[in-house]
Structure formats: C-alpha cells, structure tokens
Image (tube, rainbow, N blue to C red; front, side, top):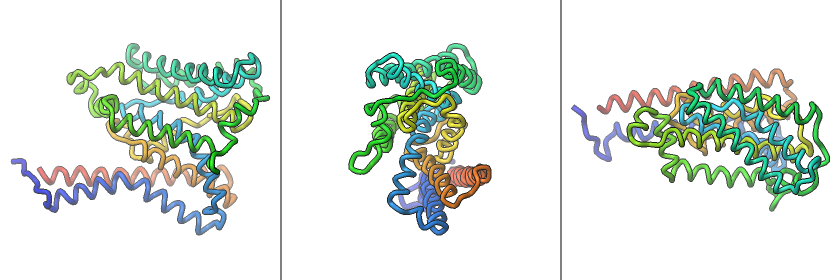
Length: 333
C-alpha cells in the first residue's frame, strides 16, 4: 500500500535533499575545479582572467543551450559545429563580398540557421530518421557547403559594426557574455514557464505518452531543432566577429563540447531531464578547465585526457545521485 508522507517525514526530506544535491552537483564541481586551479596558478582568479573565461565560455554555452533543448526530448544535434562555420562564412561573405549591411546579413544568416534546424527536424519527424543519423548527415553537408562557399580560405575584412558584437564591452563586460545572459534567461523562461517547455520535457519522458496526451509532438520536436540551428548560427556569427574573419574550419569538435556541457549540467541523454542553468555551469566547467590548463602550460594533448577524466567523474557522480534518488523514492512506496 502506498504511504502518504507528511511534510515532516524524514524520508521525504531525504528525497528532497537528494534531488537538491543532484541539481547542485554541477555547481559544486565547478567550484572545486576553480578552487584547485586557483591553488595551482595565482593568475586564475584575477579579474582579467575571469572575464576571459566568461568570454571564451559564452561561445560554447550558447550552442550548448540549443543542444540542451534537443537532448531533453531524447534527441541530439551533431550539426551545430558545421552550422556555426557555415553561418560565420555566410555572414562574413554577405557583408564583404555582396556589400549587405551588417544587420540584414545577420538576419539572413540567423534565418539560414533556423532553416537548417527545420530540415533536421523534418528529417527526424517525417522521415523517421534517427536524430544521430540525420544531424550527422547535416554536419557533413554544412561543412562541405562552408568549404565550397569559402573555397577553403578565410573571409576577412569585416567592419567594426560586425566585430563589435564580440570585441567590444559594455560596463566592462564582453558582448558575447551579455548575449549569453539574455539568451540564457529567455531559454530558462521558455523551458520553465511555457507550455512549449512542458511539452519538451513530456516528450523526453515518453513520446508515445505525450502524443496520447494530445501534445503536438511533431511540432515541438521540429521546434527544438530550429532553436538549436538558430543558436548555432548565432554562435557562428560571434566566432567570426571575435576572430575578425570567417574561418572554414571553425567549430570543429564544437558539438562534443556542447554535448559535454549539457550532460555535465544534468541533462540525460535518454531525455526527460535537464536545465539551462546546469548547462551554462557545465560550459563554465569546460571553459575554466581549458583556461586553467593553459595557464599551467599543460600540452594540448594532455588537456584532452584531463577533460575526459573530469567528464567521466562528473557523469558518474550525477549517475550516483540519480540512482540514490530513485532508491529513496522506491523506499517511500
């Protein structure tokens, strides 16, 4: 027989504590990593370095937010790195080759990113192609289009209205960091305060159940891939602005960092769980770790090993906390 737990029941308190630990584990890991790196390098916690970490992290955090939407539904988007490269190239080409204004070029580029997301979603929803396969194919296609468009060469000569969005600051804060704050807040509100966000979680928890509950599963799934494509395009624009040129090899491996940030932040690759705050914290773990290892002059190939180990430890910790919560929940029945 199912027992009803009173507010003061110890089991209920333990369950709430376990859930809180699970949600907060990524922030604890971030603080531990920052503390360890600060002990190893006196430069790590300086104001200038922290601002540098925020700037570097904002790029991956933006694309990771879009990835989180897809992962919560039980999907994935492997095309984000290639879409970012294509977006940067198109935005740069429209302004330098075709003499478009900066902001019309941005709008066209963002529309292109949303369209690629629409195609990804349609392939998955109407073509019944697994997300891994559909977005892997799009990753190859977008990278090929980038190389064709750029002829394998950087597109430079960007004007100040373009580079402003990555090189300038407002009250000492870089524009990409401000953009991340705005996008992160909007994404959080969408997931937590709207019907669309509720539907995203419902689909990840069980798509067939969501469909039987009259949730428009097809439209919602297409919607999350549009969001992912749009944010990947925005990331590509910011990368081009930051580098003062569009590089054809931009975004290689970006999809792996985005997935890692989302999973470190508590998103389950099985779908149904995840959040924007955790994803941003996960991105900062990656950013802080990369920055600290660079300050310590650790070779790049060794850095990959360290990042992999931290990722494994974080995922194991998250798994342990989730398993503990399930066991406590079962003990209360």
